[in-house]
Amino acid sequence: MSIPPPLVSALGIWTDLYQLTMAAAYHVNHMADTATFELFVRTLPRQRGFLLVAGLEEALGYLEAARFAPEDLDYLRSLPQFRGVPEDFFAYLARFRFTGDVRAVSEGTPVFAGEPILQITAPLPEAQLVETYLLSVVNFATLVGTKAARMVEAAAGRAVVDFGFRRAHGPHAAVSAARAAFLGGCVGTSNVEAGRRWGIPVFGTASHAFVMACPSETEAFQRYHRAFPTEMLLLIDTYDTLQGVKKAIALGDPLKGVRLDSGDLLALSREVRRMLDDAGYRDTRIVASGDLDEHRIAELLAQGAPIDVFGVGTSLVTSHDAPSLEGVYKLVELGEGEQALGRIKTSAGKETLPGRKQVFRAFDAAGRPQGDRIARIGELPRPGEQPLLQPVMRGGRRVGEPVAIERLRGQAGENVRRLPAGVRALSDPAPYPVAVSEALRRLTDDLRRTIREEEARSK
Image (cartoon, rainbow, N blue to C red; front, side, top):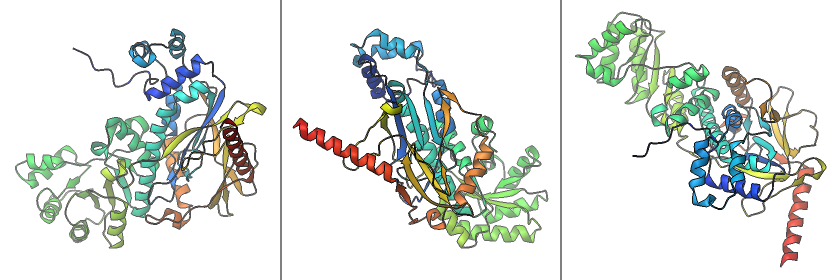
């Protein structure tokens, strides 16, 4: 009987096969020049005016940890694709370590289509091998972080909590999503592992099953209070919601909050609020959950729903309305120093800009973003501009200490709030101005002309 592999290996093998076949081809042909790849998003998902960068911490952790264990190499040797590959390639993988440099946009920074988020400069095989994992991490975390920022925008100061563990695409995704959601502005998560790993506040209440397992709803509330005398947040909609809040009030004990998980949340929240206030429970919070997204949250609040906390799940961790991010990872330069040559892709709809780049963001006197400029790496900022890409790894080692998630969350919130209101709009957002520098445009045109001339000569 075969034994299933462990969930966690040395991470090097967590990739697409073609990354390994390309690495083998580079190795066999002695192609180890320094190469620069950039990770960016071609187009924004629908109804998104910006993306909130997330996933950098996990990406750097992967680059530090990526290895090939002996059992990984044994498996690769068994694949038919590698039957003719010399043994010294597997020796290369056995000693593989990422030794490159990384420049990146800080987590919690809004970015736009075409702007490099992550820039990898390393020997060509190394830079190729890490593509899949980096795309997976940054695409997903940025997608969820952006969705969280939209929900927080819609909540207009009310708290939003990640309840998405059970609806995520697997437990690993759920943990990453919880971090990205917190970065995007959620006040906490139901995910205990995410709380342990990053210190994110964790939240939870009773279940409907607990209520149904007791002789009556009143008895259920009493037993819950017996177990959690200082954390009385009761789920009141197992049977009749309004009867449930009456029974909660009748306990006569401090009531931290009540949760609504079904029904007409607008009408129920209004009546529950009235009943709580009339009974003197003015500080008792109303928590609402159940298939909520940013549009439903905004609609409820626009209609005056007295909801204090929104628990969001499926729509958040799957970014239900726009469940994928068109992030790509492309070779933009080969060589280094004066010998560096820009590389460009010219196929229709998938064109790229060549060379290592910097993104400059212009700010007004109040610190509000006014527009971005994608430039060549050697260009200088104009007055009022600040560079977004900063060194985060040199020679395979991190630059500086990791930034605490609480600090990143605060910076992210401020960064989003400073964006123009139209760019933050939940529907039909206004475009944010992103320009390409004249020097980068000239380089692009020159390379396109060179490619056309070489194609013409080869005919």
